[in-house]
Image (cartoon, rainbow, N blue to C red; front, side, top):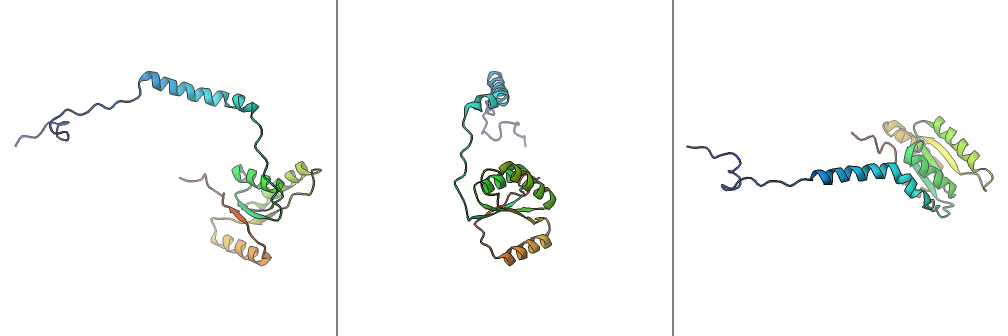
Length: 156
């Protein structure tokens, strides 16, 4: 029995279809646009207003994990500046306390001091999570929002 020729067996005897891709001009224009955006984005956006401040959120309690660096750090700072009670749930309480001192110095003279506290929490340790939960339940305060930010970019 004769074997069918490669390329014709799936298309009932027809030659395989040619797939169209990007031409060299489209490819080059894409890379040039990417380079332009990377180089000039800050200059182009310099005339835009700063982001709006959060509305007053007095009497609300927020727990922010991963709040000593990156996005969590900025979220915790902005929530505290808007008047919220922020609990920084962190692995390194010393780093969090240093941040709080810096934020309090930057914020001094603008009104009430920032309402921030630090609680130790290592989400890789179940014992640490249990201790955090027991300490939280002992204070019996309400929790209005949990911002679970710890390790979100450590995937893979």
